[in-house]
Length: 134
Image (cartoon, rainbow, N blue to C red; front, side, top):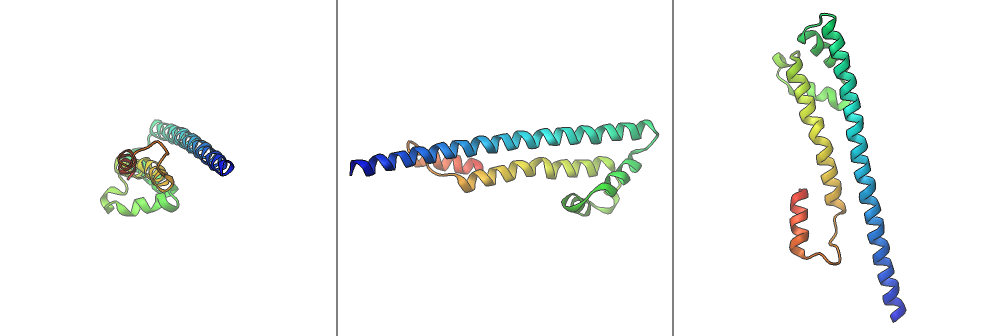
């Protein structure tokens, strides 16, 4: 019976170790996604600075941006009123609003799905953490 109890404790320790590793990988993914987003944003901003230097106005920038949208990003264009679709500030703001928060929502959803009560955690602590993730 002692061997079983020891085995059970080893399993719990192993599970906690795996959970910690998963959490670390998730955090690395978030950092990587944020870095990619910063780089992409920087590249796009540089292109628009060049366009502005070449005499492109806000409407021309919006046309170029709208024409380059694909998949889910193109769907954002459809959510804007017609008179705002060629407004660069409105279009870039809508994209930032959607994709800026999307990453956080997806990460919170992933954390919520994998969240389990820790051995030393009370139900109230678990409930508070789950509530903050939802």
